Image 1 (cartoon, helix red, strand yellow):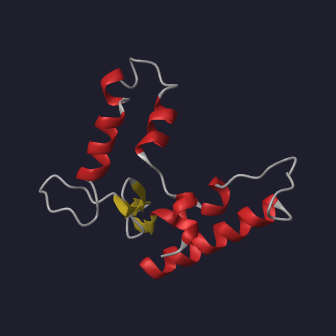
Image 2 (cartoon, helix red, strand yellow):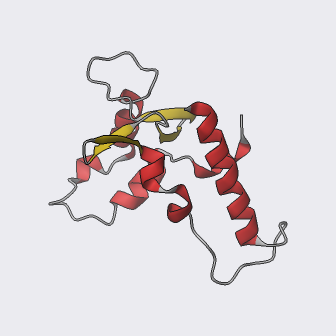
Length: 125
């Protein structure tokens, strides 16, 4: 399996961190808890057999998910793949002041990871 997927996958902790900023009246506190989020991710896995499963997430490894690469949304009476709509390049990030590390250019490294992720998505479609 492609190592870059683990960098771009989401965990329940990522959702907990993102949802923490929403007020109670938008997202109730009980829905901000890791256990609740993990149960929602698990119940909606692609391979799960449940009549209420929406098959929204593909589990990459234990606790790591990506949005189902086969998921399509209807836009103007036409079905479009979720990753075409998300534009993976647009949701990635860029350092304004790249740091020197093991990699010579941090932004170049992230760009290559995004490209590898897009190629991996193509194999899943």
